[in-house]
Image (cartoon, rainbow, N blue to C red; front, side):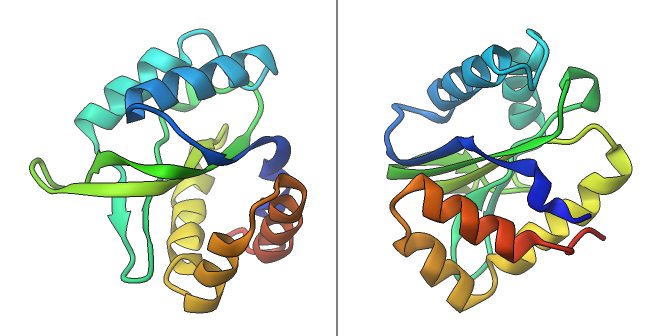
Length: 158
């Protein structure tokens, strides 16, 4: 089994807008709590972790953020995918002063910490691939995006 099982239609938001990354975290956390994916503590935990360990990333082909937090806040594993119309500011990973304008977010909820590094690696590799990025950016409906992601993340578990 690969990472494709982490993608669900109700956890894909395309062509959406948020005022800030914190606003996005609140909205996504609400969805995740309502659907039983996370504990009530998740929203505060992910905001705090993003401040301490930024997750903005430039792959050369795309700007994205991969926010995640401690496994104790996760009830069911997931990847929440957002493609926003308006970019949001995220600090670049491993920096304290480099801001990126990000419109692709892969919010991770992983129960097994041993799988988190492998998943991060797979996501980064996908977004280094020009064809993957082009297709990802061109998809505008959730059903198509779900099929695309499930197909591309099948059997990629490291």
